[in-house]
Length: 428
Image (cartoon, rainbow, N blue to C red):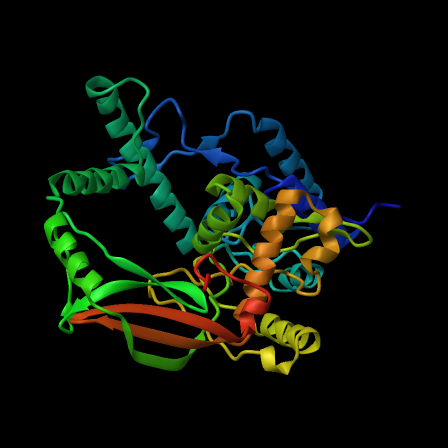
């Protein structure tokens, strides 16, 4: 009796293949391409400049065995689905795989998912599409630019500056910006200025800064002026001139994009960019959770969108209502200010909100736990109400001089119940 043919699913990484294989079951075989399988040759430019900049791809050295296995499994399979990452790089890898495996580009062979959880994988299998050639072309244009810039400028640097230097599509432009900025800094004519701060005590100590002279902004430009003002202040007396009290609302931050996650992980966790992305990739591809098997903990980590799916909003609302109370449930709407962002993916959020960081801490490495907690808390906070403060501004006068200070008292913690960003420190 002949064995029934399986459906082949090709992903990029072996750990992702392991996670997805468990979700799809015995009728599917999931294998990894381990990243790109074809690229431009290293020994020459590899771009036909005379023929519409046509790239000349070859199999990547060292990938022969993987390509051989992919071809063997594709030949045996009843159907092949290409499930590489849901971005232009992943789309290009799928296109290369289709070319290597002889898959017709007009067939719906491409599946995409934003999170590695069973429901998303199953839904993606039900809705395959054709390979998006616009995304493929975008990646190819980027790759060709990298090669043209690198191959044309790097040899020039070797001859004129130092052997071993490299130039790239991004770093060359960035270097120009840095050089221009450095020139501005060197050309800047520094000006001396002084600040005067007084310390007062009314119950407890607080400080106020000298801001005005005769109700106009005061700039102290030298030591002589500073000493003259101090002498006048020492002969006068201080009195509270005004108290301005008002309620202030502080809204939560949007869920993480790739760049905001990198910034906050750097500030709060002291992670560099490479470390943040490596750990986020692990959380996305799946971690072994006690009693649950391999689970993808976060949505796709490369995104510049703050959009959130309706399902995620509803799940967060239920969780907040149950754990914190309805007074903590916000009605926040987030949108991207820039119109040229790629909105293919959601913001970075936990795949399953009910998996609280503390509950799965024992299954994670210390760094995985820290980053997962940061992502989980940031997302939950984004769905909660604003924090409410009692703001007090005090003006203290001494003759014609006015000192000012402000303080805030927390009235309702709102989103800060679960998350405080690096910009949320409040002086009472």
